[in-house]
Structures are given as C-alpha cells and as structure tokens.
Image 1: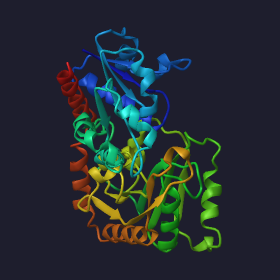
Image 2: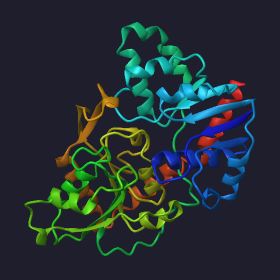
Image 3: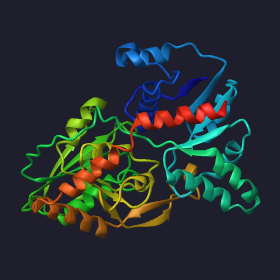
Length: 375
C-alpha cells in the first residue's frame, strides 16, 4: 500500500524537518512513499533526486494518508478518501484542546502517530480528565503509536577535535515573543548573564530561527533582558540569525561544547537530538518530548513549575513548564566546571550513543510495519 505523507517540506520550521526527514526515512527503508506538499516557485531546484521522485509519484487509491497536522484539520484529509488514514499529532503542553476530542474519536482515523511519550500522555490525560470518556481510553491508547522524530547520522556527527578556548554553550531555537516564547531563549539569556561574568572562560551562541516572526529583533530582545546590568562585565554572547541550510547545521553544533534548551513545552525537540548526535550533552527543562532521550547521564535536567498558558485560545486549559532560573544557572555552572576540568567526555559519549538510537530510518521502518498491519 502506498504511504502518502502530507505536509510541507519547504522552509525551515520543525514541521518541515519532520515531514522531509520522515519521508526520507520511509523511502530509505524500502517503503512505497509519496510526498504531498505545497510547491513554491522554483521548488524543483530545492529538492534531492529522491524527494523529486516522491513528489512526482502518482497518488494511488490504495494508499494510507499520513497527515502531519493538528487533529482539527484531519477531516479535510479524510475527505480525500484514502484507504486508511493516520493523523500525526505534534503538540506541546499538559493536555490537548477539548475540541480535538471528536477528531481523535473519528472512526475513520485508523491510527494516531505522536513523536513522544509526552504527547501521548497529553492526549490520554484529556480523556481521563473527562469521566464521560473513560470508556474509550483503552481503544484510544491502542490507536496511538509513538513514532519518534530522529536524526540523520550522515548529516549530524561529531568533530572529535574541540579547539574552543572558551566553554561554548549553544541554544538553537525560534524566538518570536520576548518574555513568553515557548522556545525559552529568554531564560537561557537570563540564566547565562546572571551566572557568568566576563572573566569566565565562557561563550554563548544564540542561533535564532525567525521563521515564525521574521521581524523579531533578536539583538533588541537581548538588550532588553540585560537592561540594568554592567555590560562591561557580561560574558561573551554571539547572535546568529542567518538562515543556515539543514545540512550545514552540523558545523554549528560542532562549534559548541554544550547544548542548552530552556523550552517551556516541546512535542519532541529535534535540535536537542541533533546536538546529541554531534556529541554535545544537553541541559534541558525536565518537561516535554525531549525527556524521552535527555537524562542525567547524557545531560542535565532543569527543575520547573507548571503554569496555565493563556496567550493563545488554542492553549486554553493547557499548562506549560517554566524552568527554574536558579536551577538552570546551577546546571550551566556544573557543565562549565566539567569543561574546565576536562571531564565532559563521559557525557559526550552518552549523548552520542543515545542519539544513535533515534534515527529517521528507524522511525521509517516502524511506520512501514504499522501500515502493513493496517492492511
């Protein structure tokens, strides 16, 4: 049966990376895969030979459509009458919006894919919190499959020779809202500039993806966060807003010694896994999809407090996690001290070994196996 992946493969968002790399993983594992994606002007020059074949493949009636989109959009794909339909739900937060329940329960949804344990728990929590829905919990649980995001080890791999004269932290995330951005770069800046001084052998690289707010002024945001501090005593910070091609991100990760993510909620957190595939240990909020692979052996987990997310109606009743600045500072200092003592290697090795278990090809094979069972 043809596997028809529906999603966008053009751009720089996490959804784009997910759609593109999952299709590639299925293709490389021998799946009969087709990509259904919006096609901008000149798209032919922006795809690989394999992607061109998948984009130009004829759509078959005997197919399973896998839509990488939120549940309230699933009906439009189901209306295209695939033989089977799978919704791939990527979500951030403690539970899902209640208006998704009818779409999750739709009998024409043959399976639900999620990228992490975190998202699966969020869906099930919403059903468990509503006593009238307890009778369907087992059926919904059986319908949900964790298809982890992954990493391509041919693109992301370690440069074994580190030449940094300073302990270099890297944060790679979008930033569109100064104080309440889900990606948490504001917390990274705050913790870093409070914990370290110019005299410390330390550097922070902020790699900002401006996909969701191209007009956002990153330098102005940083200046706002350090307002009132003596700039002559602050540690070095490097801001990178330049669009970096996906296959060149490896160079960026290898400029660093430690990856830091202070996200308030994540469905998975692909950049953290990419960094680990380059041998970087990760400092992470102990909440979200990344807790499937970040642990105390390959990184540091930061304490947090849950709070109600009220900035968007979509997140009504949903909680996010605000990382503890105090604990984030502590974990950054611990990482720095290990670097100074030249004792990071065990975490480097553990990070790399963990990432090797989360590959797109592995996810692709799991998708093929589940589709075969649906037939």
